[in-house]
Image 1 (cartoon, helix red, strand yellow):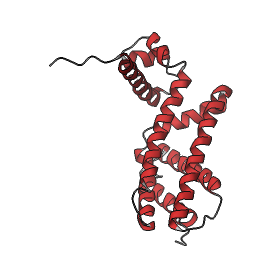
Image 2: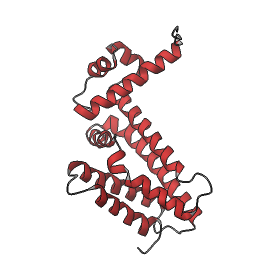
Image 3: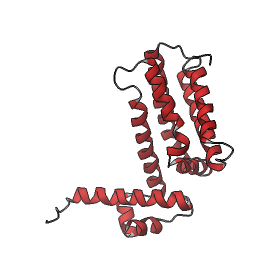
Image 4: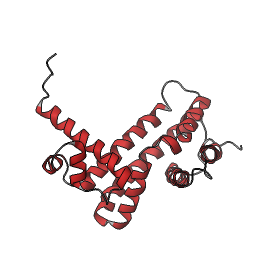
Length: 205
């Protein structure tokens, strides 16, 4: 069967996706700083020129990887509110989503390295912080939607809860990643469940 020839735009999209996939694999193994443009291009089967035809710089590609992962997370969060879900169903979906984070978030180390890079690189920090503000705003919007649909007043402003939730999830996941024997899946889930039950769900236990 004759292979269908890709259009110029399809070929460019394919090249871009292969570069992103290769970069993700190498960043997770070697780290952002230790990875060169040549490493990424070579792993994807392209030249340095192909890299710069798709990305202006390695930090730009890094931010695109983060955005791609963020969009996947947003789709999962949006699914919590799908259909005419009851409060109990929404609570169960929330807990299921966050309890999976310690083991399912394959890009966690990417976010850790992005925060370290932002702390050291002023130019990257500006772009990364704009992206993080967007993440916080979206998370706060989901928290407000849950509160309105569940009929549960929030103990704190949604923006404050979003900041606390992100910090808690990052901290618990970092501890789990560094020391999974002492910070087990069950412990991580218990910490997150307690936070949601008391602070977001408004339950006493």
